[in-house]
Amino acid sequence: MDIASNGGRYRASTVAAFEAAVLVRCTGVCGGGGRARALGGTRARAPFARLTFTGVLAEFSRGTAAERLADLLRTAGHEASVHRYTAGTRHRYEIFRVFASADSWAYLDRAWAQGYGELCGAPAEARSTRQARHSRALAEAAWRGVLLVSGPARTGSPGLRVADLDTATVLIRAGRMMRLPVRMSTRPGGQLLLVMPEHAAA
Image (cartoon, rainbow, N blue to C red; front, side, top):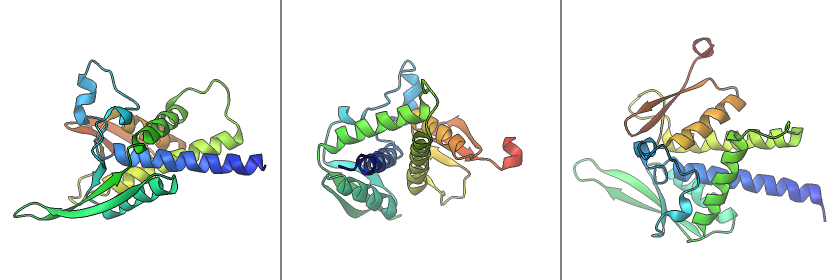
């Protein structure tokens, strides 16, 4: 058995799973939007498994985000499909729903908890080169997910809106790893992340 090869595949699978978890959290179904800080300061870092399963894992306004999530889930061995429908009356718009098997919730639960711990936890000892590369891959996956869901805004408003504080914290930490000068401010309905020009962030 090739242990090194198996280890590489495992790290790649955990990065893909974390990206899927970020995609779902960026829709706001897990963080409760701006309510997260009002609940006595207690914020659930892995709430997927506690949600009532209806078959709909997430809804997106962008087909690319929905297809990406479905692809990640199917690659991991979970059933997933994308259904498009048109909503609205006077102003029509498209919604892309991702349907997934019930075991997807526990899968995302574990992926989020693991990725959050690696990006936001304080390591007990210095990371090895391989561990540092893995953390960087997780950071890139987090930003890839949020950009698919949240940006750029069609209205031209600055920044990326993120529903809950924990997801915003992950993106701040990930941004630092990637040397992105990211700032966060709390707004009604969630957090606003701004990638600042380098001279402004200095």
